[in-house]
Image (cartoon, rainbow over all chains, first blue to last red; front, side, top):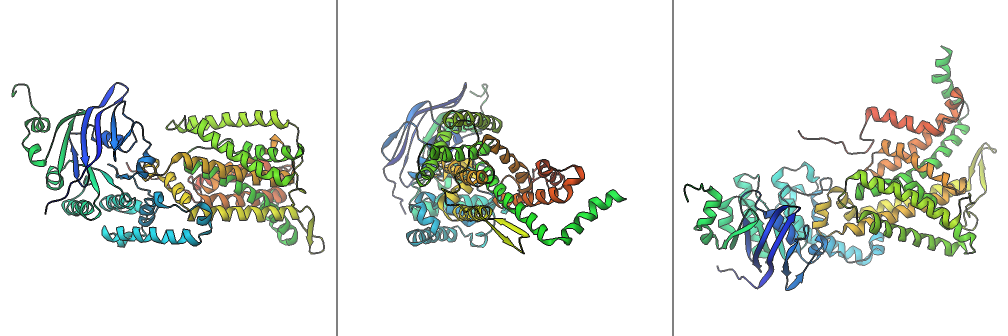
Length: 263
Length: 316
């Protein structure tokens, strides 16, 4: 079945980011299209996470421009990015450890709660109805991710693989248009990886969410992505379909390492 | 031998011998305690949301009370002065966020702590500049607070009506805040911020808004405490000292626990009154000033994280 890939959702144009004298990203350009599964790969320290942080507004690049949903933006605060539909997960799970699975996922609905404080404080009328709707949405996600059994457990007590799943759930609860996943499968065993792959593909398919992910497992990347961009030392090495990347000599060199004698 | 009896046995005989007096002492302690709870609540709220220990909490109590009384002295009736004071506390919260917290975001905690000390001195100077430094009398009557006393058991037990009002208002405020923090979107957001700043940002919570809300709530709490405490003594800068009584309360209850602030406040309040009344004479009286710190110190030996604080376990 051929997937329908749409218009450009996010365009990254000549982005450069430096911390003091350290250049994290240099002159990066690429674009992510609607409904695409877009992978960012590269060796450690290549600037992959920095790239995600730029996209969701944690970092502000010194140069370059980002266009999201056709709107240029110079500086964007991360909570504005969230409101406009960019959700993310983190490399080392950033959940609210003291709260239950349900509450964690519920925080993803905060941007969708519109009723004013007075109604909420009284827990009456419209606020109640709204809460019910949000609750339903969260329950759907819990079903979808097959985590019914742990909905009341404080997430700090959950094993790592499940925490990653809850984090995905929280991001999904935001009903994002663009979902950024920072190493969603790191530290997982084969079965957990397979589950996660299934979830990522299902999200992409059922909710029509555009996904940009960072991953080190090449098997996974080549299997699930529509497009891959390769970074190394903050520069873009290559961009293309998984097949093109597999055959790209520069990429192979960057990953395997090349001594000057071989050149 | 005799000294042991006077320390360990005699006081309990005194308590059992005159239960009504004992009740009176507990009541006095309870009223003080619930006000400590309120102040501690203000600390906990700010500490949870921004990791800052707000040194200025005590001076905010004075500043709020001073603004209220000062406005009234300048001929503004109480029912207008009160909303204006609330507005002033909002402006204060907003300015603190804009001028102090935002420029210092991501700085080490100690820097933020220093900034709140700076804020303390600013508020002292600013308050004195506008309303003058001399002690003022709280406008109890104009605020429709009762000032009679009720007696029970043939005048043996005397309850000041203002104390009763203070307890009821403080209890209502605590219940309302607990509900507010449990049920509303801001409450959920606040808990999220307390847990993880970055994750909170990523789900679209604005830290700046949360900070303003939290400082505003603390300001309102300061105002309530200021009115109640001001009615019991008077409104002067010395009042800010009571905020330091919140420290042992926080050590007892745990810096991050709302429940701890309430229970801790009551334990300290009642504990120091009983200590003062039954044991105070042994060392020449007025141990009320430091007993709270002693209780907290003893607690630190056994539960360094406080009654309800989270135990910190570091994985090596």
